[in-house]
Image (tube, rainbow, N blue to C red):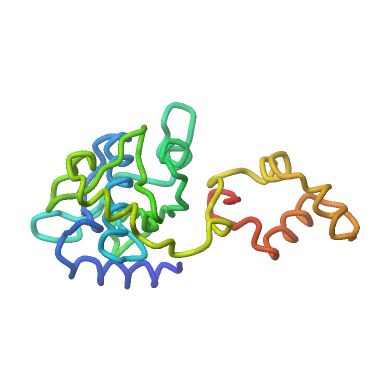
Length: 215
C-alpha cells in the first residue's frame, strides 16, 4: 500500500468503534502483548466476517486522537531477531500478516494488518486468544466462539494458504526443490537466484513482501 492508501485506511479505522477485530494502542508495551493481540484479532476478524483485523499504534484509545508513537514495528528487535519474524514464527497456523510504518500529518504510526483466521483458531505460543469488548481473553473461556471459528467454511483452498511467512531469498531456494521444478517443467534453470525467484513469484508459489518472501 502507498502512504496515501495507509492514511486513508487509518482515517477509516478510527471511525469504527473498537471491536473484536480492531485495537488501538498509543505505545508499545511488550512483544508478547502484540502476539496475543495478533491471535485475538485474526480470530475476531473470522467471527465477524472481516477479511482483516488491525492493530494500530499511535492512537489514544479513549479519544481516538492520532498522537503518533515511538514504536517502530519494522525495526523493533527481539534479541538479535526482527520482531516481525519472531512473531511470525510463534503464531500457529502461520498467517501472512503485514506490518506498515508511515506518517500521518507528521505523526508516526505502526500498523499490523492481520488476515482473518481460516477455519481454525490461530494461537500465539500455543494459546488462542479472542477480544471480548475491549479486553483480550483466552479463547478457551468462550467455547461458543471457538466452535464458530472451527465451523467456518474455508475462504480459499488449503493449497493457496501461506506455508511459511517471512523467509529470505536464500531460504526460498534452500527450502523448495527449485531444480526439480525446472526439470519437471522442462525449462532451463535460470542463471541467477533472482531468475528463480521471479519465476516462482509469477507462478504464485511465493509472494514478495517488504521483509522477504512468503511461501
